[in-house]
Length: 354
Image: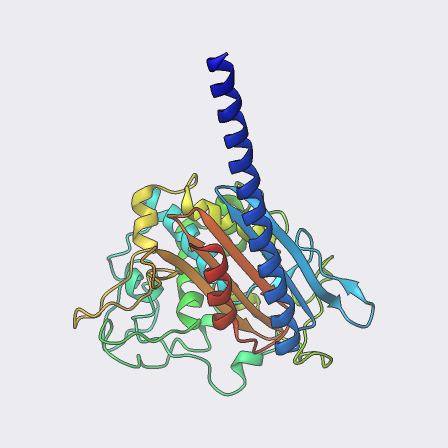
């Protein structure tokens, strides 16, 4: 009789504990949804997609607002394709890591090893410096950011290749996208494969990221959201093909959750290669940059590691946050220019990260 009573007590204790966990998770999601709706309204965002995973399981995935306001087409996180802007750099980084694993690229040698015809500069610089925004490559000039003429990656390199470096490599951190245009040229020359095909073969297809692709300005792409300058005004057309490595991919929030999980538990690249791209680089002064290769890295107030990238483009403001210790991935994609993603990212972090 005593044994039966003990077993019953344990059963009800476990049942009660399970109910409390479920109740807590429901409260967390309720709070997150409330904050998401508030953020959507306050920023005047036409459409937004949010997906969150924990320990490999999708625990929240929801669309807010419209992929197309005029047609009243709702956002669907498993199919609505957004411009992911600079999160593209993270995809490029994992592809680069695979090439490092395959001994096709050495991060620590001169870029001229792979591109001997690139114009000589006052200073030499390595692949690592290039990918970490330490090489001194310039950023956009004039209307280059809104360029609507379709260019290849090689044609894109022509825009800046004859310009001087802005500083001696590794003496400053200067975030820019042109460095990733040059990096993608190296990657496709080394692999003898078109860059987009390379990314597809090494990363997108193995991770089953079937909704992630080049933002091709000259063809119809199903489920691609409309892009907005503000809540009701469309953004200007732009051609992102040449800068695909730094800001030219389309994706869904659910596809990027799969990508984030690869960073937590790598299946395509080695732990050593992952360490290389997710560890902050240093300046010659010894100061950390807070950026590895294709990923920003930091520790929030609670000390847990945070690997992430945000993005801003024409008709796009995005964020991907990865917390390896908690095995949590958070992705937020919007179809509006100039949304303040950092503050909302911190809001979600406080909700989902203990």
